[in-house]
Length: 255
Length: 255
DNA sequence: TGTGCAATGTAACATAGGTAATTGAAATCG
DNA sequence: CGATTTCAATTACCTATGTTACATTGCACA
Image (cartoon, rainbow over all chains, first blue to last red; front, side):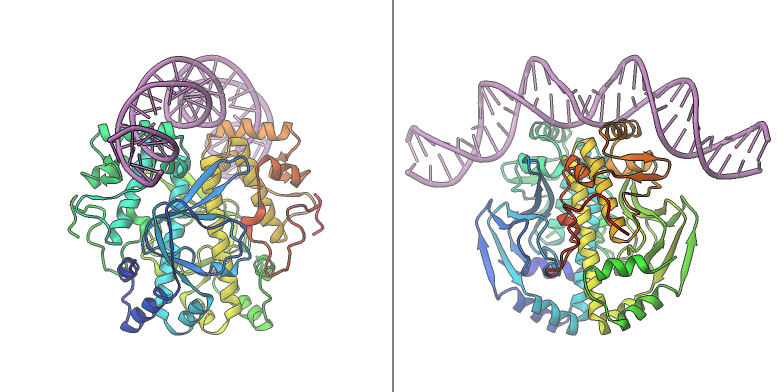
């Protein structure tokens, strides 16, 4: 519903001018669409037409094999941009589906051309977004290739937690958490049964409190250690400006 | 040693002008460095300074956990660009090491700024490279999360084969293949022992001929089927121009 | 204010792939 | 050119995670 998360995130990285703000603001109010939960926004094979900016809600990118095996390859949280410049490709190689109800703004090819020509700060900010997304995807490769079930889930929860916090979407040590165990299974390459076992273990160790659609993280530090989580890949700092001590943050950060 | 692979690859996607060629040519002859096999070019934690263009040789990107577990997250083949615009990040979140002897050209921030301002075709080509690399990384996520050992290795071999072919580095149905079983293990998240078992299986099925540092693929089609390989994610075609029938190519393609 | 379906939880059993240890062949090196 | 290291191959055994099946909870909506 709002641009706040995007701006908050990008400004962590570059300082945007009032004009930049206006540009982003216009881009994100024209051509807004709303979707219900658990529907596809984009399907593999389609011609990409616009870039999607998530204004509110959670979504994921997924791929599927002919026999039905399914892998979630990334999550989209509010403020995320689906794929800067995708429209230069002929067809989508994956699908995008919603988890909750979602509002998105469609950004046109034109928008990017204008930005490229006239708004270098925004270009830089978009490159940052692109590079961080690539880094996240590499870290998922690492998780799936090397981490145990418990480490994988702990790691994923840390990542989501920090991304939500950057977008201003955590409250104290808890946050909305609409993912089902099936979603977690598809994202971590584990079976639903084993995700269930592993969540119980995390609960028993006091690392998470997960009930209904709410997640609480009593000690981010301990959860990070359990997931062998090193926040460097999120690149949440820039040019000397240090994000308020991500790695060693006290467990409850103020909004 | 040469720019040919890069140009061949990019031109598959956009037609570059003589001026574009000249630009790339200059960029890839200034500031060339040579490395031996099995050395690090870039280390996690360093400040990225230049973008690296692989002129010859094979390299990989890898990440490591404190306890030594190691994951190769991508391979670099001749003509590959390490990370367009990395220098906007404060530090590297992974390392890059050579497999064979490697020659690289270092592309400066300045080079990218000039290109951005004056050479839109090159910008588009670089965006294509970036988007394809992202797609490859997603496909690795898919492989590690969902494919069996045999599928994973078959899939990886198909990917490398097609990328080499696009760069003009296959001869008939065979190619140089400097990866050890340990490298394959680190890339697929399997143990060396299991990689060995799986390669034997692929050999027994007549899907590959792998001896010394040479790989032959008697039938790309059959190998693709074994790996549940769908080439769409490599985006080797553009705007109606179809890459000479990648999916159904006769097994021996002329150089 | 039940009723139906999705999500969670549990148990018993199965297996793909990991571990450790050893051997031989082939590069690489001093 | 013999010594040393790396790589490939193989065996025996082990375990983390998958599979199938079913019970329970909870919540959307009639």
